[in-house]
Structures are given as C-alpha cells and as structure tokens.
Length: 106
Image (cartoon, rainbow, N blue to C red; front, side, top):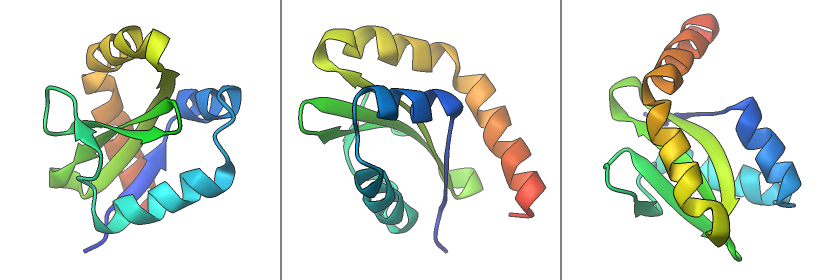
C-alpha cells in the first residue's frame, strides 16, 4: 500500500526560502509514497533527512499510519537547531497527521 505524503506549512515556507524547486519536492514525494525509508535516519528510525544540493529536507515516517510528513528544510549551519525543533514537536506532528488522514478518509 502506498504511503500518503503530507507537508506542514513550515516545510512549505522553508522550501520556498531555500529555493527548493517544486519539481524536486514532487519527485521526493513520489519516491516517499513507495519507499518512505529513503534518506538518512537521524537518531530515530522515523526521523529522516534527504539532501538536496547543500540543503537538507526533513521528514517523519509513520509506518503505523502509512504516512510521511515533510516537516522542514535547513542548511548545514541551522541543521542542529532544526532537528531539535522537530524532536520537540514529535507529538504535535503525529496528531496533525492523524487529523489530516481522518479528514481525507485514509
């Protein structure tokens, strides 16, 4: 069963700020639908990053929900802070995914 790929408003803003092309996001989303475990795990199996040039795209994999949430983008300089912010919001992100899946009937 393919995964549902969602994104946060924060991710959309950061992707725009770091000039990540829409085509790259679409390409990554398609890949994540069939293989959510691409990229590098970051201390947790479900927290992963995928590099694009010198930027890092962060996402959370929810195997129990068959969903992936694109959460942020950073450069090397802000990587550590970005990862800490993501870790702080784990519970909030999971609730958001559950709500979104309920709305769409997945």
